[in-house]
Image (cartoon, rainbow, N blue to C red; front, side, top):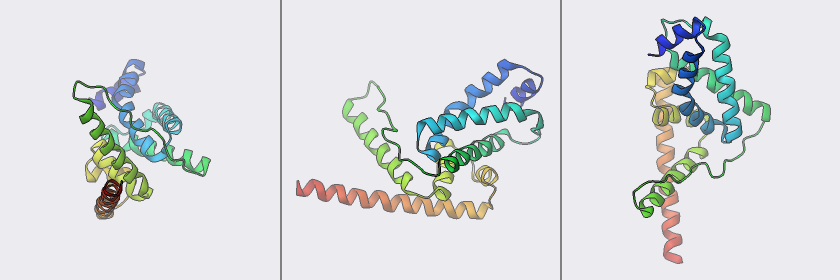
Length: 185
């Protein structure tokens, strides 16, 4: 499907580009938000990524997979924005509680779990946070992630392992702290 869209884009079909945007925009924004930790910066990175894709689509080799090429541009844009700002601002209120027919108690639990996981993820350095995000939030294979990041597959596997271990440690430490606070209150 992507290859067909790209062929149409190369022929000047603007609707095909809009379709490509709709296909990638949500995932791109999630990844950009994980990297930049600020919604405005994430939105800027996604916008710049699509501009670069549009300008350079004619150089894209149809024999290759589009996703790694696209996400490599996105990560580079995020890094460019962070370098330009020369600081990282922690994001407040990243997760919004979803409305659903499930009871509000269940929604609160899911929100709290997501918030804990997001906070733990933010504690990791970029070298580990980005591969975890690409694998578990976006759904890339390890081979694709290694290609996107331009690193050896074994290096990637090591970073994913370290990241999972650090997340487990951070989450278990927080559970212990929360348990102690509950007991003493």
